[in-house]
Image 1 (cartoon, rainbow, N blue to C red):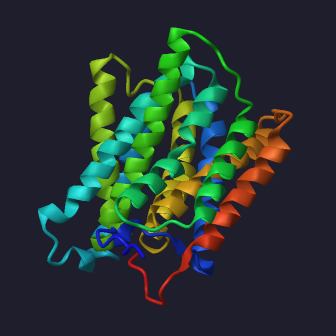
Image 2: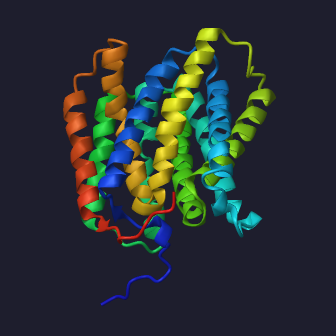
Amino acid sequence: MTAEPTTADPAWALHRPGTRDVVIMAVAVVGVSLSGPMTALVAAPALAIAFWRNAAGAAALLPVLLTRERSTLTGLRLRDLRSSVVAGLFLAAHFAAWLPSLSMTTVAASIALVTTTPIWTALAARLSGVRLPAQVWWGLALAVAGAALIAGVDVTVSLRALAGDGLALLGAIAAAGYVLAGAKARVRLSTSAYAVVCYSTCAVVVAAAALLVGIPLAGFSARDWWLIAGITVVAQLLGHTLFNLVLSTVGPTVVGLAILLEVPGALLVALVLLQQLPPLLALPGMVLVVVGVALVVRASRPVAATEPVT
């Protein structure tokens, strides 16, 4: 019998979510599901939205870090922040790659490709030595296939569309790097410490990119500012930050898979708020996503009964 690899990164292992984790991720899914429909209502450039939601998110969490979680900074060294900075760079790369893809290929193809994130987190975990049951791979495949059906993927054959598809795929890989680096950071850091560093890094990089290509970061209408504030609250604070909270207990692949629920979630939100009818294959796609998530969760190991770092 072949011995199990000993290089497995414990931060990347899969763990079965407890009741607390499920509730937190459910709220986070609602948050990120509201992001797409709300962003569609904003006239401001996408990179400007990405900058402000990250900058404002970091600013909102800084008081939490300096008061309620100040004790977690004791003994912290600069090298302990390395993974948080890396996560912020990956998050900025995700925005930089995926947002342009939306105008180069079909939105459906872009969404289908960018939702392959949990596949990449699972592959990275496996390469690090984490053992993943066959049921996990089946669950991931079903969930991604379901997301593709919901998106209603159509194929456009052109060099521009092909480049857009490649950017969307890079966006998915960068998003995987974001949650993988975040899982490492959360081993040592509290949620607020990690998020402040990660979001700040992302905001600085996105701002530099926006200024480099001449995209304005201000001068928007009052309506746009209110929408950006709403996106910050629901997508950044209730979405990303709550997902970051459970990273240390359920692992990056489960979080990546939970984020995949944004696809059917955004579909339902768009139906209610924007009266946009779902595509024909949305219902079977939603069933596949739910079944896929259930398979992965069922195959995950139970979490040890320890108090998670907040």
